[in-house]
Amino acid sequence: MPPVFAHGALRLYLLALLESGPKHGYELIKALSERFGGTYSPSAGTIYPRLGKLEEEGLVATHTEGRRTNYSITPAGLLELNSRRDELAGVENDISASVRRLADNLRQDIRVNMRGLRADLAATAEAARASARTAGVTGAGAAGAGYSPDGERRLKEAEMLVQGFRDDMRVELRRHAGSRPVSAVTLETVKTVLDQARISIRNSLEG
Image 1 (cartoon, rainbow, N blue to C red):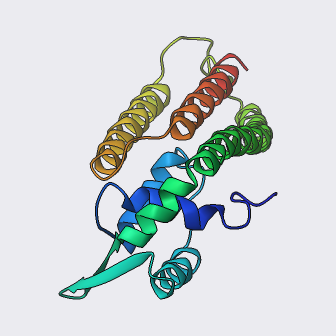
Image 2 (cartoon, rainbow, N blue to C red):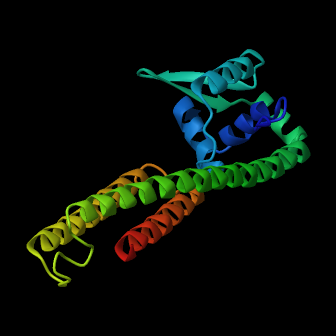
Image 3 (spheres, rainbow, N blue to C red):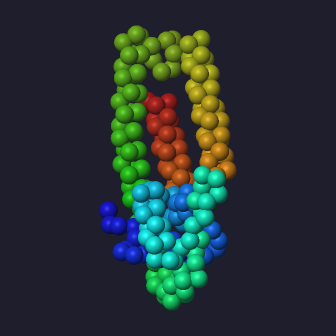
């Protein structure tokens, strides 16, 4: 995969992020992740060395609060940023292109994974049908009836699994949204996975 930032671009973008006020390292990492819609999150090993270099050059200053180090742009850093506004606009355009590229790659990965999941589900469903045939039970019930005690039990279990999944995911989504917005990629993943799950379950019901 091509690099997300061209040489020197991340350094410039860090100055731009600090223009709005002091931030500690995690806040900068979070801001970058949000700018990329969750498709890219830089590591601490990527961010802190660049912040250290900016501090050495007098473009960034640090001050410590407890165990946390905050970074702020200096007058020299602001002068540097103002002199490179056109370059910063180019970085923003590159980020937008990177977001689209990374999102496309993720969607492709999801499609590939879902093809594998569909194959696994189909194999599992076929194995279950074969087992039922061996036991002399069809999908419609042993005597062709629409109701059986075992069928009712499995229906309730399936409904509980669906409800449990829904409840768990609602909690996860809201917990995540409390710290940062749900990304477009996450929404795309939810749509794709649920659509494929719906298709697979319907195929199993009709099989």
